[in-house]
Image 1 (cartoon, rainbow, N blue to C red):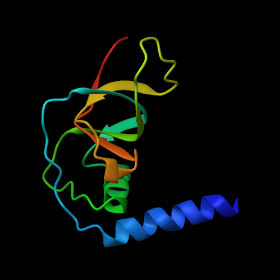
Image 2: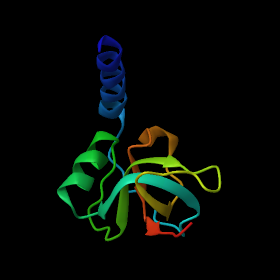
Image 3: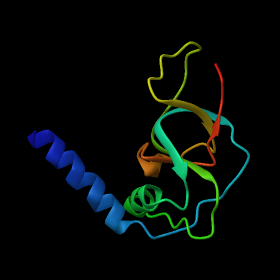
Length: 104
């Protein structure tokens, strides 16, 4: 429990230091397993984006939340399998932009 609090504090510290920026929207090229995919205009997407210093204002694309890369064919995702813009490392796998469904 204590280690989770330290990790959360570390992420929060990085997030506070990160400036708000609008993420670029490019052609999706990274297969991801996301806990959920929501519109960029949703409250959930805005909240997570704020945590990592992103401003989604003006974007109208699907956003993946809590995503991790799919690296093995046949990976048992357990979430939503999508292809997205490759998430930036500083987003801590919390969000991916422009996520489109794929069928494996």
